[in-house]
Every structure is written in structure tokens, then in C-alpha cells.
Length: 295
Image 1: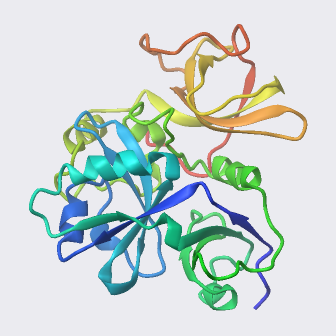
Image 2: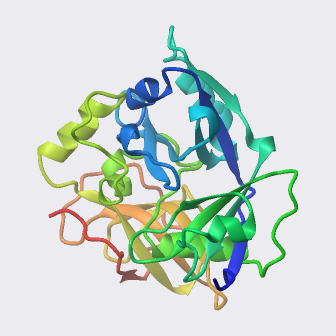
Image 3: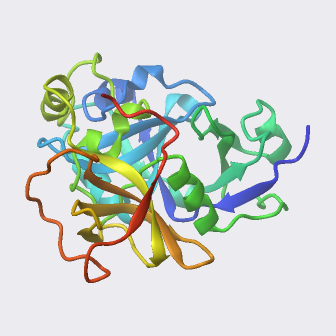
């Protein structure tokens, strides 16, 4: 097997461990995805939502040893998410612990990333990461093991791959800002509409069954040098307000970013978007997403 082309240290991701006899039942009642579909060697994307259907965090779920489940999420959100989920434990036989210090999370980017024996070559637990159109994986290692000696991608390069893939992330600046479908979670199998109730399910299901979502995650690139960050708000040159979900700056200074905005041709209602970072309408070009948005 060819060695993977490059690795990226994702040291901004933390790890929550769910242990106990009732973890699947508990997580089914709290997360938007169908946890019963989580199998070894896969990563299941899921949202944690408040009762109003707003996304508090996005998790990447992984099967661990002894029947436990690991959840990968930004370290900055980990304490708040753990506290939020513990409120719903009641008498459930579930333990939630911060295992971030135990693991090193690496992104693997190469044509061989999705190969079944990638973990054997590198050491650690490999899980698929990219969508169907790309070959990426995550490698979860014991933090005491030495990291593989391979070429490295920068964190910004990995972020650019996520943006190109249309994969949203939620940070402190955007936690609780978006209903699940605004982040296109229904397009990347991060919502189940058949598994039953979970926190926020009523709002998310109503948005699904009652018609088209007017504001969606979209991909843009600025036409001039611009710096944006998650949570920034503004107005596009065509008058649509936007809120940044994730952004990266290219070498030439232009900004490629994911933002929630009204779909082109849809009349939007007044929202909370603030003044444009550029002092006026931001000139951008729309870039395609690798998946189709629902009609």
C-alpha cells in the first residue's frame, strides 16, 4: 500500500467518551442522527440541539473499545456540551467523560486514506471522514504513542478541504445560531427523520415537512482580499445577509467561506445580520457544493 500523502494534527478537537449500558438509548434521545447505524470504522455525524432546534454542536461519533462511543468536537465547546448532555442523564446508566488528554486526532488526506489497512500502516483507530466524492479519514491515536513521521498539512489546509466539501463546523461564536437544515445536516446524513424523538426534533421535523428551507449553508469566495471568521455577519453585494460558518484565506488574500444566507432568488425576512465587514455589500462568487440541496 502507498503511504498516505499527508497528515494534519487536529489538536483543536477534543474527545467526549460515553460509557455505560444505556449509551445508545441515551444518545438516540439527544442527537439528530440514528446512532444505531454507527459501526466500527465509520464516523457518524450528528448534531446536539436545544429544544428550539438550534444546533449547539456538531459531533463526529466513533465506536470505541468495550462498547463505548467517542464523540469528536471542538475543544472550546466540550465543557458546555458535556454540561448540556448531563442535564438529560437523569437515571440513565451512562457516564460522560472528557478523554481529550488520552487521544491524538489526525486527519489523513490521500487517495489511500479510505483504505481498510490505513490504520495498520500508521497505528491507531482509523475512521472514514470524507463524503463520497473524496478520500479522507481520521486517525485516532493514543496520545502517548509517537505521531507518524509523514508530511503534514496545516490546519488551514484541512479547513479548506472541509469548506470545499461543504462540511459545517460549529464554534463558540456560532453555537445556537442555526437550525439543523441551515447547516445542510440533512444533506450529509447527520439527521434522521425516522428514528423518533430527540431534543429539538419537533422544530427540525417541522422545517423538513412543511416546505423549503429559505436560508442554507452556501459556499462563496470573495472577489477581493478579505478576512472573515466564524460568526462574522454582513451583506452580500446582491443584498442578501449572511453569517459565516467557517472561512479560510487563500494565498492571494481572498477568502473562501461557508455562510448561511438566503438561497438565490428567495426573498428573505429581516434577520440579525450586522453591517458588512467591507463597509458595504461584499462582492463574492458562488462556488458549488459537492452535494445537492433539497428542492
